[in-house]
Image (cartoon, rainbow, N blue to C red):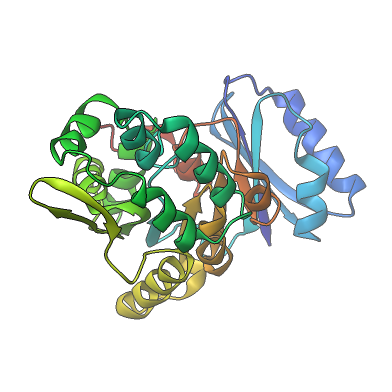
Length: 294
Protein backbone atom coordinates (compact mmCIF):
# COMPACT_ATOMS: atom_id res chain seq x y z
CA UNK A 1 0.00 0.00 0.00
CA UNK A 2 1.20 3.50 -0.87
CA UNK A 3 0.08 7.01 0.02
CA UNK A 4 0.07 10.05 -2.24
CA UNK A 5 -0.09 13.29 -0.27
CA UNK A 6 -1.10 16.56 -1.93
CA UNK A 7 0.04 19.70 -0.08
CA UNK A 8 -1.17 23.05 -1.41
CA UNK A 9 0.97 26.07 -0.58
CA UNK A 10 -1.96 28.44 -1.05
CA UNK A 11 -4.54 26.25 0.65
CA UNK A 12 -6.57 25.99 -2.54
CA UNK A 13 -7.31 22.26 -2.75
CA UNK A 14 -10.95 21.24 -3.12
CA UNK A 15 -12.85 17.96 -3.16
CA UNK A 16 -12.86 18.18 -6.95
CA UNK A 17 -9.06 18.11 -6.93
CA UNK A 18 -9.09 14.85 -4.99
CA UNK A 19 -11.48 13.41 -7.55
CA UNK A 20 -9.11 14.57 -10.30
CA UNK A 21 -6.14 13.06 -8.49
CA UNK A 22 -7.98 9.77 -8.12
CA UNK A 23 -8.73 9.74 -11.85
CA UNK A 24 -5.11 10.46 -12.74
CA UNK A 25 -3.93 7.64 -10.51
CA UNK A 26 -6.44 5.27 -12.12
CA UNK A 27 -5.18 6.30 -15.56
CA UNK A 28 -1.65 5.45 -14.36
CA UNK A 29 -2.77 1.92 -13.46
CA UNK A 30 -3.17 2.55 -9.73
CA UNK A 31 -6.17 1.61 -7.60
CA UNK A 32 -7.24 4.16 -4.99
CA UNK A 33 -8.83 2.65 -1.91
CA UNK A 34 -9.42 5.80 0.15
CA UNK A 35 -9.06 9.59 0.12
CA UNK A 36 -9.05 11.80 3.20
CA UNK A 37 -8.18 15.30 4.28
CA UNK A 38 -5.32 15.88 6.68
CA UNK A 39 -6.25 19.56 6.83
CA UNK A 40 -9.18 20.57 4.64
CA UNK A 41 -8.13 22.62 1.63
CA UNK A 42 -4.43 22.30 2.43
CA UNK A 43 -3.32 18.67 2.56
CA UNK A 44 -4.92 15.36 1.63
CA UNK A 45 -4.00 11.68 1.33
CA UNK A 46 -4.90 9.12 -1.30
CA UNK A 47 -4.25 5.48 -0.40
CA UNK A 48 -3.48 3.34 -3.43
CA UNK A 49 -1.90 0.20 -4.78
CA UNK A 50 0.18 0.15 -7.94
CA UNK A 51 3.44 1.66 -9.19
CA UNK A 52 4.56 4.57 -6.94
CA UNK A 53 6.78 6.04 -9.67
CA UNK A 54 3.89 6.07 -12.12
CA UNK A 55 1.72 7.66 -9.43
CA UNK A 56 4.23 10.39 -8.78
CA UNK A 57 4.56 11.14 -12.47
CA UNK A 58 0.79 11.26 -12.84
CA UNK A 59 0.33 13.78 -10.02
CA UNK A 60 3.36 16.07 -9.94
CA UNK A 61 2.78 19.41 -11.59
CA UNK A 62 -0.94 18.75 -12.09
CA UNK A 63 -2.19 21.08 -9.35
CA UNK A 64 -1.22 24.73 -8.89
CA UNK A 65 1.48 25.41 -6.27
CA UNK A 66 1.02 21.94 -4.83
CA UNK A 67 3.70 19.51 -3.70
CA UNK A 68 3.16 15.77 -4.09
CA UNK A 69 4.74 13.18 -1.81
CA UNK A 70 4.38 9.50 -2.77
CA UNK A 71 5.63 6.89 -0.32
CA UNK A 72 4.97 3.50 1.21
CA UNK A 73 2.24 3.53 3.84
CA UNK A 74 4.39 1.51 6.27
CA UNK A 75 6.59 3.55 8.62
CA UNK A 76 5.13 6.81 7.45
CA UNK A 77 5.76 8.46 10.80
CA UNK A 78 9.51 9.01 10.99
CA UNK A 79 11.66 8.55 14.07
CA UNK A 80 14.81 10.17 12.67
CA UNK A 81 15.36 13.42 10.80
CA UNK A 82 18.74 14.27 9.30
CA UNK A 83 18.80 17.73 7.74
CA UNK A 84 21.09 20.03 5.83
CA UNK A 85 21.43 23.61 7.12
CA UNK A 86 22.24 26.21 4.46
CA UNK A 87 19.29 26.95 2.15
CA UNK A 88 17.34 24.20 3.94
CA UNK A 89 16.98 24.95 7.65
CA UNK A 90 18.11 28.54 7.12
CA UNK A 91 17.45 30.82 4.18
CA UNK A 92 21.06 31.68 3.26
CA UNK A 93 24.43 30.13 2.42
CA UNK A 94 26.59 31.24 5.36
CA UNK A 95 29.88 31.21 3.47
CA UNK A 96 28.42 33.54 0.85
CA UNK A 97 27.27 35.94 3.56
CA UNK A 98 30.70 35.90 5.24
CA UNK A 99 32.21 36.63 1.86
CA UNK A 100 29.93 39.66 1.54
CA UNK A 101 31.58 41.20 4.61
CA UNK A 102 34.90 40.67 2.84
CA UNK A 103 33.56 42.29 -0.33
CA UNK A 104 33.79 39.12 -2.44
CA UNK A 105 30.29 37.65 -2.24
CA UNK A 106 29.73 37.43 -5.99
CA UNK A 107 32.98 35.51 -6.50
CA UNK A 108 32.31 33.06 -3.68
CA UNK A 109 28.58 32.62 -4.39
CA UNK A 110 29.32 31.52 -7.94
CA UNK A 111 31.53 28.70 -6.65
CA UNK A 112 28.93 27.78 -4.00
CA UNK A 113 26.23 27.50 -6.64
CA UNK A 114 28.38 25.29 -8.86
CA UNK A 115 29.33 23.04 -5.93
CA UNK A 116 25.69 22.66 -4.88
CA UNK A 117 24.78 21.75 -8.45
CA UNK A 118 27.38 18.98 -8.36
CA UNK A 119 29.64 20.64 -10.94
CA UNK A 120 32.62 20.92 -8.57
CA UNK A 121 34.19 18.68 -5.95
CA UNK A 122 32.66 19.87 -2.67
CA UNK A 123 35.77 19.62 -0.48
CA UNK A 124 38.04 21.34 -2.99
CA UNK A 125 35.46 24.06 -3.57
CA UNK A 126 35.10 24.64 0.17
CA UNK A 127 38.87 24.90 0.65
CA UNK A 128 39.08 27.39 -2.20
CA UNK A 129 36.28 29.57 -0.85
CA UNK A 130 37.53 29.52 2.75
CA UNK A 131 41.01 30.49 1.55
CA UNK A 132 39.52 33.72 0.19
CA UNK A 133 38.33 34.61 3.70
CA UNK A 134 41.83 34.64 5.17
CA UNK A 135 42.32 37.62 7.47
CA UNK A 136 38.61 38.28 8.03
CA UNK A 137 37.96 39.36 11.62
CA UNK A 138 36.46 36.62 13.79
CA UNK A 139 33.86 39.09 15.10
CA UNK A 140 32.25 39.08 11.66
CA UNK A 141 30.97 35.55 12.32
CA UNK A 142 28.72 36.73 15.16
CA UNK A 143 27.74 39.80 13.17
CA UNK A 144 26.77 37.60 10.21
CA UNK A 145 24.82 35.25 12.46
CA UNK A 146 22.85 38.13 13.94
CA UNK A 147 22.29 40.12 10.75
CA UNK A 148 21.98 37.55 7.98
CA UNK A 149 20.95 34.12 9.28
CA UNK A 150 17.19 33.58 9.25
CA UNK A 151 15.46 30.30 9.97
CA UNK A 152 13.52 28.72 7.12
CA UNK A 153 9.78 28.93 7.67
CA UNK A 154 8.51 25.83 9.43
CA UNK A 155 11.93 24.70 10.67
CA UNK A 156 11.17 24.95 14.39
CA UNK A 157 7.69 23.48 14.01
CA UNK A 158 9.02 20.52 12.01
CA UNK A 159 11.78 19.58 14.41
CA UNK A 160 9.94 20.26 17.64
CA UNK A 161 6.85 18.35 16.50
CA UNK A 162 8.92 15.32 15.53
CA UNK A 163 10.83 15.40 18.81
CA UNK A 164 7.62 15.73 20.81
CA UNK A 165 6.50 12.49 19.15
CA UNK A 166 9.69 10.69 20.21
CA UNK A 167 11.84 11.48 17.18
CA UNK A 168 15.53 12.30 16.98
CA UNK A 169 16.91 15.17 14.87
CA UNK A 170 20.44 15.82 13.60
CA UNK A 171 21.66 18.88 11.71
CA UNK A 172 24.59 17.95 9.49
CA UNK A 173 26.09 20.73 7.43
CA UNK A 174 28.88 21.36 4.97
CA UNK A 175 28.91 24.81 6.54
CA UNK A 176 30.51 25.82 9.81
CA UNK A 177 30.06 24.95 13.48
CA UNK A 178 29.94 28.62 14.46
CA UNK A 179 26.64 28.82 12.60
CA UNK A 180 25.35 25.25 12.84
CA UNK A 181 25.56 24.96 16.62
CA UNK A 182 23.46 28.05 17.47
CA UNK A 183 21.05 27.31 14.62
CA UNK A 184 20.58 23.74 15.85
CA UNK A 185 19.97 24.95 19.39
CA UNK A 186 17.43 27.55 18.27
CA UNK A 187 15.48 25.09 16.13
CA UNK A 188 15.66 22.19 18.60
CA UNK A 189 17.98 19.63 16.98
CA UNK A 190 19.58 17.05 19.24
CA UNK A 191 23.01 17.79 17.82
CA UNK A 192 24.89 19.49 15.01
CA UNK A 193 27.78 18.34 12.85
CA UNK A 194 29.63 20.84 10.66
CA UNK A 195 33.02 22.09 9.55
CA UNK A 196 35.39 23.90 11.90
CA UNK A 197 36.74 27.22 10.69
CA UNK A 198 40.30 27.69 11.92
CA UNK A 199 41.02 30.99 13.64
CA UNK A 200 44.25 32.48 14.98
CA UNK A 201 44.74 35.78 16.81
CA UNK A 202 41.13 36.76 16.16
CA UNK A 203 41.35 36.30 12.39
CA UNK A 204 40.22 33.56 10.01
CA UNK A 205 43.26 31.64 8.81
CA UNK A 206 41.68 30.75 5.47
CA UNK A 207 41.62 27.07 6.37
CA UNK A 208 39.07 24.55 7.62
CA UNK A 209 39.89 21.62 9.88
CA UNK A 210 40.10 18.23 8.17
CA UNK A 211 38.38 15.95 7.45
CA UNK A 212 35.80 18.12 5.76
CA UNK A 213 32.14 17.42 6.48
CA UNK A 214 30.67 16.63 3.09
CA UNK A 215 28.51 14.07 1.33
CA UNK A 216 30.21 11.05 2.89
CA UNK A 217 29.86 12.45 6.40
CA UNK A 218 26.17 13.14 5.89
CA UNK A 219 25.52 9.60 4.68
CA UNK A 220 27.55 8.06 7.51
CA UNK A 221 25.76 10.25 10.07
CA UNK A 222 22.40 8.92 8.90
CA UNK A 223 23.54 5.30 8.95
CA UNK A 224 25.18 5.63 12.37
CA UNK A 225 22.05 7.22 13.82
CA UNK A 226 19.91 4.39 12.49
CA UNK A 227 22.24 1.93 14.20
CA UNK A 228 22.33 3.91 17.45
CA UNK A 229 18.56 4.20 17.57
CA UNK A 230 18.03 0.59 16.52
CA UNK A 231 15.60 1.52 13.77
CA UNK A 232 15.20 0.65 10.11
CA UNK A 233 16.05 3.09 7.33
CA UNK A 234 12.34 3.19 6.46
CA UNK A 235 11.77 5.12 9.70
CA UNK A 236 14.11 7.95 8.69
CA UNK A 237 13.78 11.17 6.76
CA UNK A 238 16.56 13.25 5.18
CA UNK A 239 16.17 16.70 3.64
CA UNK A 240 18.53 18.97 1.73
CA UNK A 241 18.98 21.06 -1.37
CA UNK A 242 22.49 20.47 -2.73
CA UNK A 243 24.53 17.76 -4.43
CA UNK A 244 26.33 16.93 -1.18
CA UNK A 245 22.95 15.94 0.30
CA UNK A 246 22.17 13.32 -2.33
CA UNK A 247 23.81 10.35 -0.61
CA UNK A 248 21.86 10.77 2.63
CA UNK A 249 18.66 11.56 0.73
CA UNK A 250 18.97 8.30 -1.18
CA UNK A 251 19.66 6.30 2.00
CA UNK A 252 16.73 7.64 4.02
CA UNK A 253 13.31 6.03 4.11
CA UNK A 254 11.96 9.31 2.77
CA UNK A 255 14.54 11.53 1.09
CA UNK A 256 13.26 15.00 0.27
CA UNK A 257 14.76 17.59 -2.05
CA UNK A 258 13.76 20.93 -0.55
CA UNK A 259 13.67 23.82 -3.05
CA UNK A 260 16.64 21.99 -4.45
CA UNK A 261 19.16 22.19 -7.24
CA UNK A 262 18.12 20.25 -10.37
CA UNK A 263 20.50 17.34 -9.76
CA UNK A 264 18.91 16.78 -6.34
CA UNK A 265 15.31 17.41 -7.34
CA UNK A 266 15.65 14.92 -10.17
CA UNK A 267 17.13 12.16 -8.03
CA UNK A 268 15.22 12.42 -4.75
CA UNK A 269 12.22 10.24 -4.00
CA UNK A 270 10.23 13.34 -3.11
CA UNK A 271 10.53 17.08 -3.62
CA UNK A 272 9.08 20.16 -1.95
CA UNK A 273 9.13 23.22 -4.19
CA UNK A 274 6.15 25.27 -3.05
CA UNK A 275 5.58 24.80 0.68
CA UNK A 276 7.67 25.55 3.74
CA UNK A 277 9.19 22.84 5.93
CA UNK A 278 5.87 21.96 7.56
CA UNK A 279 5.20 20.02 4.36
CA UNK A 280 7.42 17.35 5.93
CA UNK A 281 4.86 17.03 8.73
CA UNK A 282 2.00 16.67 6.27
CA UNK A 283 4.10 14.02 4.51
CA UNK A 284 3.90 12.08 7.77
CA UNK A 285 0.14 12.57 8.01
CA UNK A 286 0.40 14.99 10.94
CA UNK A 287 -2.36 17.61 10.97
CA UNK A 288 -1.78 21.22 12.03
CA UNK A 289 -3.70 20.69 15.27
CA UNK A 290 -0.95 18.24 16.33
CA UNK A 291 1.99 20.52 15.53
CA UNK A 292 4.20 21.98 18.23
CA UNK A 293 3.96 25.65 17.27
CA UNK A 294 7.20 27.52 17.78
